[in-house]
Picture 1: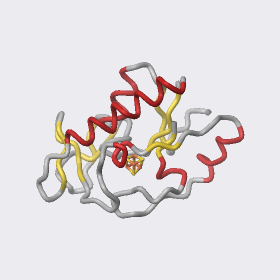
Picture 2: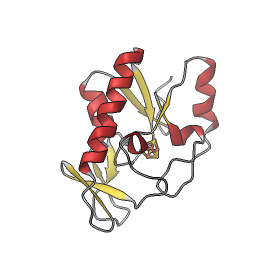
Picture 3: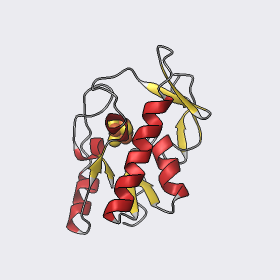
Picture 4: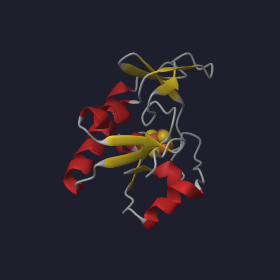
Length: 138
Ligand code: SF4
């Protein structure tokens, strides 16, 4: 599984995507399945940025979007299990997709230890999670 935005899909909160040739190049070795947990969880494009605060997720304008983030994570896990996916390359620092370090919930560009909601759920089920900044020799 690959975060859709890493493959150029315009699914980010600001309606943009990213261009990461090194992630695209993985298609030479793996079957890539793009997935965006936030859109799958029912959030629109564009959308108000959100950050994780403990177990919940809040937008910059103070709306609780935890349910949408959880739904997206559950759908991502279900998709991995259905397709037999054992590895994921997810966007770093995202409140959904980040692994290891994410924004700390203060909307001040400050990072804290932790995983995004989807990364956390996939890791808990034994799926290897990488980021575009750490492809881990994939
Ligand atoms: Fe990209 Fe993940 Fe955010 Fe979707 S939820 S835009 S795939 S970082």
